[in-house]
Image 1 (cartoon, helix red, strand yellow):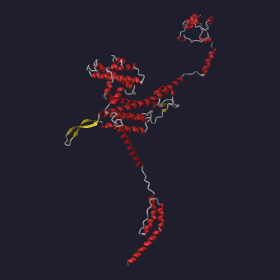
Image 2: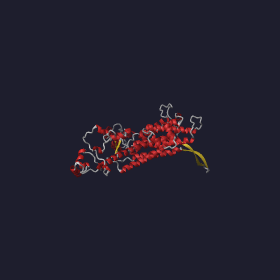
Image 3: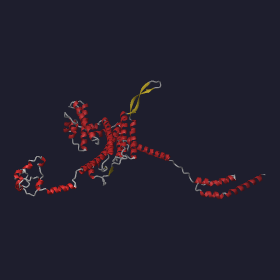
Length: 533
């Protein structure tokens, strides 16, 4: 029995081996199709199942050979790019704040500037890199605008941590109120930072408003379309700027009103930025190094003539400025430095009333206050008349030795907005000036063309009448004059003509002749009409 069962199993295995050989060629062909990932076919006990698996195996092997391509959606691509950009921005921010913490001294030796001055320089450098190429009235490129807003937010984030302690009410669990001290952003920052952000947005919006304008355009200085004469007369100090050009008939009324409206808006931004900057500079402490460099009295700082003009009994600031030489920027800045130095001297003399002190004053306190008010009025007029002036020696000294981070942020941010507003205002004025020149030329041309010119018939008629006239008729001589009078002096003026009622006819045109005049006759001033007869 056992032996019979073993023989039956061997016969079953032989049949199974022969059955598997049928599909061996197919299996080898399938293996030849694979490259590296071909699977080995395993025999199965069920022949039908083996045949089905063998028949479907080549398709499964092809699926394993060809990798499935995964489609990446746009959202995933955007998320990946956003992550990469965020990492890049974080690296830039780390580098920027590392420089600020080191005080711009990358060696780490402690020789850097203060945090306030480093932050002020960061604002200035950022504005120079962004707005230094704003040479036309056109919107800022999207990349530069995004960089400006991003890095300004970085620098202004410092102000969120400049706080002050204020009392506040807190309600306890039992319902009782008690006063505690809490922190909030410093008052000057809380008021001025949002205002400066608003002014910033207004300036960028003003530039965006010139997006679709087609009334004027710009040409480079070296191009054929540029007006060399106007460029020489107006833009000698702005040779790097392109020249604005307007149509031959000038700007339209709508474009002119649009430019004037934008000019008024930018002018308001300029005034607001100037006011904030002046207020912050006034609140900054005067460095001792600046005070040590001053003379001991206001007369030495101003000069004798300027001192007498300010200390007169009846003072007129406009008249004072009219007598000053304000022909160049250097002279204006020198006058501003002298006046600011005198104000500082007078203030110290008023606070140090001790006559033994070097800053003691021999003039009454009331007069010192009056002189200070007059000098401040002159400074205010200079700032409004010349808004693009560089910083004075006092302002530079205050910014350099300032240690208040909040004041440094407000002063630098307002200063760069003031500079940008002045730049935009200058570009608008350049376009309006070009339009004014075109309008003046067109008006002059119309006036010349409006002069009535005689027609051809009138010219022929006048020439015919002139041909029939004698010399006597043309000169207005009467027919009753004798030939003797004509022979004596043909160009003599009769007494009757001199007595004419019309005064306009008394002076006749001078007739040029070839008659030679002797030297003796030229000695007299003029010969009388009677001497010619």
